[in-house]
Length: 318
Ligand code: PMV
Image 1 (spheres, helix red, strand yellow):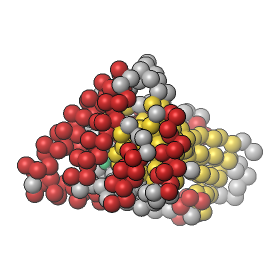
Image 2 (cartoon, helix red, strand yellow):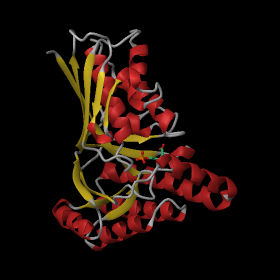
Image 3 (cartoon, rainbow, N blue to C red):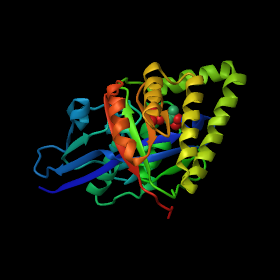
Image 4 (tube, helix red, strand yellow):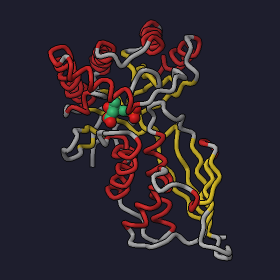
């Protein structure tokens, strides 16, 4: 039976989250240690044109026709079909498997949309280029995450480190030396859309407090870019920790994130911060490669439900 497979990585935001919504830069990195994998099996002898969708991570096993058209999986498929000017999907079974925890800041929803878009377009014989895949994933993210900046779909569809400014041309980032990150999951599920919306309310009520902090986060991101370029990991760490302090001041951290950040620094991390929407989800620590396992183990003892050690290779943008 003919089968098509496609996958997509997760992502982590190194710095600049939340402020990026207000127009300052953020840096995001693909994380290849977690991924979404989609397999499509053609069912040419099926009695109807309906397709079966199986996604165990969200407990879904249903016919495509039974899903509402704004269901993220159905919406992704509809947008891909529209782009291909195809009026229907031939009968098939779509299996979606993911090792990316949901609602944790690792880009699970964008990764699903990207992997599924890649699989559908390949299944129909016209694999999309990365920019089209990214646009489709962005449409899906908009439906389900309020007013996203677009950083998740971009970094996942292009699979490259990204210096991202909302609405501006994307810039891929080069690193002088590889960096090692320890990513730790608080186990607390948090809705990014809610944290973003609540922050917007606070910014509107008290711009004098929030605006300078958001601007400083933007400056930190530009400084981080320079430290990556120079391979200055000590200064990079200091900037990441300052970024966490500012995120805590604008009210998007939580006790567990603050504790894990402290724990990482106490065990030799060069810097540490929450990552993504905050109030739960993940934090990251910049580690010397030889310290990463010790930091990961300390974070587990300190309450993290899962840790990932990831190495971001040194690359020069093409
Ligand atoms: O929670 P995540 O990893 O999807 O990241 C959200 C990043 C924010 O800056 C808070 C929101 C956005 O759309 O950029």
